[in-house]
Image 1 (cartoon, rainbow, N blue to C red):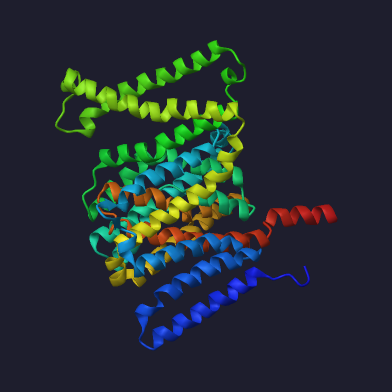
Image 2 (image 1 turned 90 degrees about the vertical axis):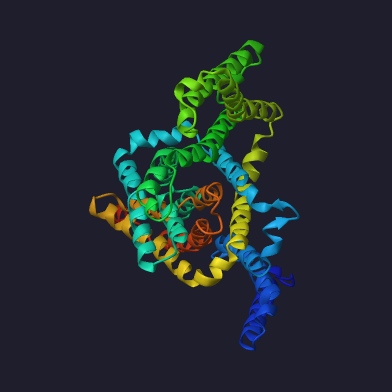
Length: 453
């Protein structure tokens, strides 16, 4: 509109001025004074590029860079407040993110295994072979300290996340295949990720297979299942919730209680594995059994009953859309907070190996795209599926890797690679996706030429 102020342009200009000040201060020897200007540069740029259709997809990444810059200069503000250590929020934030992921999923997402078996099997094979193997190769090549090297392998051994679905959508790739691969890889993670870490990462640091498996179930699988239940009930997809009969509600609650009992039984079976000091016979002793049942009942309540009741309330007041509208924003903020905290905690390590780690993560990420794409080409998949699997392989669930590093109490070392990999993959993924969006697949070009001829 003529005469109106273009605030986006103004923000971009001010951000460039901040960058200029950073450069001047840096080369005049006043490096410590660059802190507020560098942080302001990223914040203003993140807001300014929102007005550019081609660049606004990078806005979120620049917000993360702003958090990272602030954490590097002022780590004391992002590690603790008094006796409260901020790292305790990493796991709950991941659980919220995974719950949000569950609310976007339906059981139909898994039907792709039947509809596209070849693409799914090849995609999963690429996901859990290329990145772990490339990861150990890069960690060995760069000769990182053991815990840093283990972090690179942990990123490679993690499943893909929601970022791959977003990038597949932007790239106009096979979105249905992307969603199915992400869902299947995530469900396989409790078994595959600890196995890969035990076999590959165990060369660098001790890995407890069972402990890691249980942690992934608690941090990833349970919140996703809770999100699925919330999704179905809040949308009235379950027939029991479509009527007003109290009997139907009672039947559903009874069904959820059956799941609660199953969780308790599973807990009894897993207790000797989780706690090596307890034998199977001791699980039947009341002192162990009662405490275990109480823990499993709480877990089952959080997984099934709480989301069911919450979904019922939201469904009754028809407010479900608000949840789906704001959950992506909550997830994005959660990931940014996790990366900022890890950066602050690992600041000293980043200062000593930062550039090498950035290069290693970039090489890891780009190799995943490259090998994922060309392997699919070699086995004869169509162009859209090749692009999809390439993105699935290169884009990992860095949030899950970060949370695992936290429960291992190695967030300042093992957690560094996920913290670097996360924002980097958003930049490379967006770039690759936008490039592919502009480059039509060969099949579409051939179809268009047939129609015009």
